[in-house]
Length: 408
Image (tube, rainbow, N blue to C red; front, side):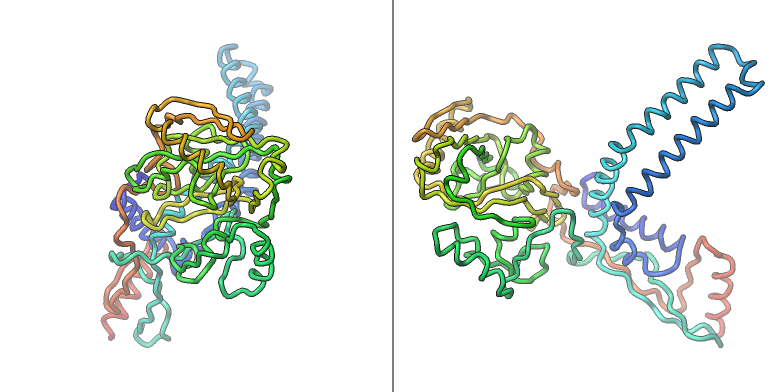
């Protein structure tokens, strides 16, 4: 994937054409359902078996009479090749999952652009009517996506589910941030269904933490100035209250921040980080602090429809009150000076510093579109007298279709 909408659409066209030429059935439907990650164990096993086979072949060749006759330089080179396959076998557990993750991310770009395949019935002179898969003819249309959930899908957040109110409302009434306040039907992953927007940013269990449970934890938050995709820029270092804060060690790179925290390009342009070190006596200093904590869910872009960020980090939704207000005030001076600064606010140390990341936008996520995608692709039906050959049994198929069309 090159991050160009037109080129990605062309690649999609070529992939569907290839699938339709090589096989039978609904190629777009098959492509949408393809889950590369499900084959990880098989690929690992096959790769390790292949490496072992090559090593064994080299060892036996060197022990054989012809191998004994080889010059020492050649034998040394073959031994190095065998050692290389041994190293590859050892590294497979690291390399294959990483490669599959990258391939799966790129595959999702194509899956997101496909509309759907269609099955076309045609008469075949004197023979029963048969289903013939839609061939790969693609037409631009309004983007219509069927989202495939990833590893860190959103927790249950449907507005119509009474169990959600029963679970979270009592805590909200006791002073925890109202994570049910904002309802939306525009979150791409839910395709028009009403959900609680804030709750949807969590994956799995969401825990209610009080001030004593927050003590000793490290929080971080990115802020900056308006950027290409984030006109708001997440300007306030302390955020609006309640605010999202990353939980744990601050990210070391733009990639880690974007992907693990699932911060879409349209939400935040970065530039600076505020890192808050809550003291062990935080429960005494700010006894009213309450937060929701959990893993970060995956995110699909709204303004940049094909951007996808996996998530998997940890976050808080917390109202830090006066502390957040002071963080925002100091953050403005840090933005103006562009230099790092550490301040202690009511016993809470806060570090401010520029990230100096230059690769923040149009880079991370499976799609890197610089412009909104205005169209995606769907297959169109072939006319009943329109004949296209396949690679598989192409002569037989073409001949039967020609004969059938002549009898219609």
